Image (cartoon, rainbow, N blue to C red):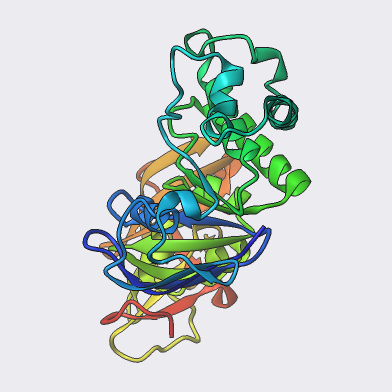
Length: 333
């Protein structure tokens, strides 16, 4: 396996000066909204899109100008791209067949790849006889069988239902822990990114907003975009001189304060009054939406303690959970 290094990489559409390193055997998730440049980034690494500026190295080798077949990279697409007329076994083996790998070697590697993703019992079937989750496993096995230096996964779970996504997410994580390999996994699903990734790269408008561990992305967002994009509900962001802030915090003009729903304190004497406008019940927890002097705030409470809509309630925030951002740049201060 090999690491990946991108240095000031640009593309005609979707990537603007990306620099990042993916360690050997690391699983990096790339998170961002539609149009952020996530898929273009994968295509650049794979050699399926041209680099207009910058360099890409895989395993220390400059592959910027190399065609895809010389990069030893496997890519799993959102659509799975299975050949409908071929059996599962032949779909998995296809890349080896076109390279004239000996048949005995092909049989051995197909069996090993299929077993690693739990689809060995499907080898005689055609793709039309498979569920969405089974097709996804076959696509993963086809990537594994080539024994690549790098695995690139382009939203491979986006076509699955919620239950199957959770199951497949666990399978991919277990596969990486068991087999290793350098993986770059693109997704717009924040839960998927945080659960799967050793590190997470958050993209916006073709650039990297922040790279860090899942805990760092959650607890120390580098920008207001990351603060709002990662988290459901999104982080509260209010003017620093607004009504909701710790009593000992007096930020400079032009600062924003950010705090997550779990940092909100309700009912403490001396805090400003807010009005409950909405309550979303999510099992044991509920999210309470309030208006405080015109500023929207969302708090998380136990469902057994949720207030009624229209109730007046005092709203504060824990000082240790407040983040400060520059309102002009959006950067954390």
